[in-house]
Length: 501
View 1 (cartoon, rainbow, N blue to C red):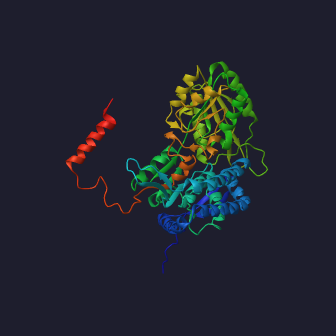
View 2: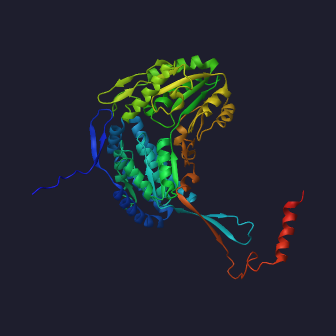
View 3: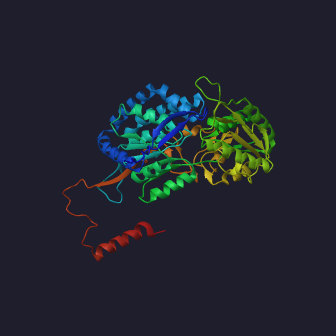
């Protein structure tokens, strides 16, 4: 008798980009699995929301302890799946741990019911309450998988929501292990991880009450379109082409060191990376020489706990293609490679040498499209106004920096840059400050993370409540019956209040 062939369940293969080896294979969650996971999360959320904010914070602190105790496994997985340097790996968990302490200590105040004025109605009481949305979905990227997945998870949980995470198919392992550690403390099904490709993420968008995405503008548009079918709120942090403006009076040594770090940190695979530098002409040559010197000190190669490198291989195999395409386009149009400009092979993956380009202009994709690699193009400008015009002439608006010894002038110029975030005499690190909002404008995103109370409250539904405390009052002035006399009284009052000069 003939038997049907057994078709194996699809799996997700996670590779070590530095060595080319398989780290793990995981089963893929399909649409039905996603719906079931969200249903479980919705049930768990009801009990979680009934806890006080203080009690939720206590449990999240305990979950942090469990996660930190599992850090050896988390670091190993994160290092292997991303190809990143050990410093960046441990930095991700440190960032998450610091955020938890900051948010837990402040959440009871931020989520407390607020009394507001009820004018023009007198004798009433007005309140704003902050209620959880329900189930929050998070689609996180591959470049900072732990930090960016849990960075939205923690405030969402504190606000009383359940959370379902769909990490990047390239880097799901460390997030999955961290969540497993947290779940030894948290209620069952409150925090879950789904494994899969774009189809799994699309199914998540269809089920949740809010969706948070970090990714490219193209991904953001697809998510927003799909979310619009159910009017699901979205939080999108998308790409950037972040400018650095170096004025003639800047500390060039500090600016050059910052440009090397800001352009190469995490292999340049950061949405806030320094991707274009505009330098006032009188100091452009001196700055560029200093930058080349700093870039030649940057070490790259295969990662590992004891590897003495500053950045490792590309996490995504597609990224090297984008970097080399942008570089080829620039050199074909006259750009000059001052250092780097080539692959550095490791045992199984690909690193790219720290690269500085001169003779660049805006006909080149290197100056207009997100590169996401360790390449820093430097362009002289006549003055600050020309630098500002170039900085703002982009479809992106995520991050920027201004460098000058005149801090007041720097602040004034920074305020004119069209970006959601900007630094003066520093770069990138503003994204790690919980008290500052982080998000983009233009095609760099919708909404913001962090930013104190407002950042946490975005995971809430604001409910307006009006209370009449005097229960014995039988009627209100605005109730029926209407009379011509009352209308004339309001007419006269309008003139007395607002019609005189």
